[in-house]
Length: 382
Image (tube, rainbow, N blue to C red):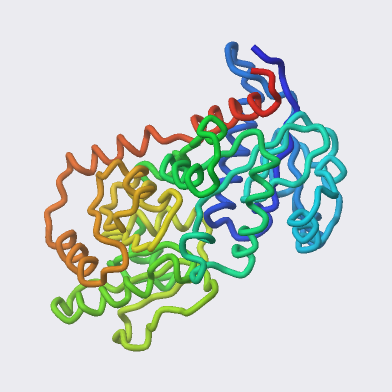
């Protein structure tokens, strides 16, 4: 078995709100740090975990953002300028910014040029190719950055087998270079305390509610959810309010003006501690995305014992093992019918238990173990 290696990781996503990619980097780094400190025989070793961030203004917050056991090595540099260079040439190499490492992991679609280190890159989805009209201008730059990153990488990681298959087809990659490292569910999601009315009221939330979690941007299909909720209200005026948790993103926003007063709540971005309790208190979680690379909110709701109505997408079906109510993406009528069916059905405790058992098998430790295997492959040592 190969010896311990020094691993450099792009931790830039930790410096903003911890949404999808930020939570991936947070949980992966924490699990890698546990593996590095475990000293367990038979596991490929990590001699050092080193986090860097490609930013000028955010460098001062990096040390506080990484978990214990992770070193910090970074130089100030403008992120946009670096990406402009990396989309066109092989300078500057990542070692100039992060120091000497055995392998460097680009955690957010982009792998910088490398001098001697092995390269690993995570491509979370192909929305920038599949639905370019729904993504931000920054994500559209992946059309130039990702192909170069794929050429630099010895190993390419994806959060699901569905995205792995898409990536192999879109870029004609050898299947052996692409590995799925499914995301995990933190233990805090299992049996969380249900929020009491006072706790909810203090945060402007009603005692009963339907819930959606995600940035307010076109790919998340929140316009479809709002249309479906309007149809649901027309037939069932007593249905609980709809709570949309997430910060305002980009693109056309859903039309909220036609919903009755008191039937829609927009708390904005919510930190993970509060989010767990908010999810635990929901009647159901709606996940109406047009496209996804994984589907973490449904999986976390499953862990918390909350019913889910989600878009029937390959990655979501894979993440949930089909143990939630799935409806065709982009179909407001089908989503309204799915919401109504879930609200009117008696929740079977056996179904809830089965969903929770499935979620418990999806761990960040397993994600980290698969990632470490990729690191060692990238160095050419095994």
